[in-house]
Image 1 (tube, helix red, strand yellow):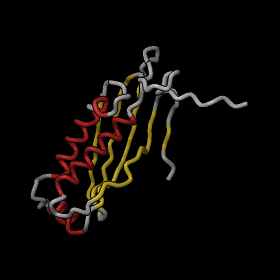
Image 2 (cartoon, rainbow, N blue to C red; image 1 turned 60 degrees about the horizontal axis):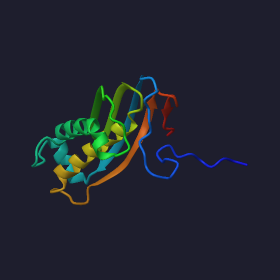
Image 3 (cartoon, rainbow, N blue to C red; image 1 turned 90 degrees about the vertical axis):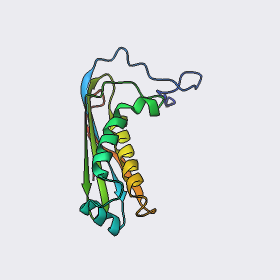
Image 4 (tube, rainbow, N blue to C red; image 1 turned 90 degrees about the horizontal axis):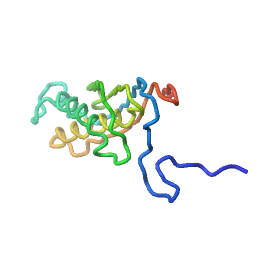
Amino acid sequence: MTEAPRFTHLDDAGHARMVDVTEKQPTVRSATAEGLVRCAGHVVAALREGSVPKGDVLAVARVAGIAAAKRTPELLPLAHVIGVHGVVLDAEITDEGVVLRATARTADRTGVEMEALTAVSVAALNVLDMVKGLDKSTSIEQVRLVAKTGGKSGDWHRAE
């Protein structure tokens, strides 16, 4: 007979809870996430020319993503407050739009997957906000975790 799955974020009564990681030892961990802000050709051209009326889209997206990674527990109620020791957010203009890639690092008791995903998500929202006046059909797509290292579960990389 198979045992019913145990949900780590529910107590015995089925109520949401934060997992207690007090006894875990801090380890070095990292996570990388990516996403795409799909833009029409004329928006890509404006991004490349630096002529978006609201200013430097990629600079704002980078800063917004880094700031967001540090505020992840404010947005995700069951996320732990951890030391976010490093965040790099890369933004690249491609023919499809803007590709965003964030890597978050820590030396803590739990991983930084949500921080990397939050960084990409908020950076993408900022890109969209800054170009929406040029094209309302701009969309955010494919926000996903692509790799993580460290912790009890070890390393993981998305197979493509």
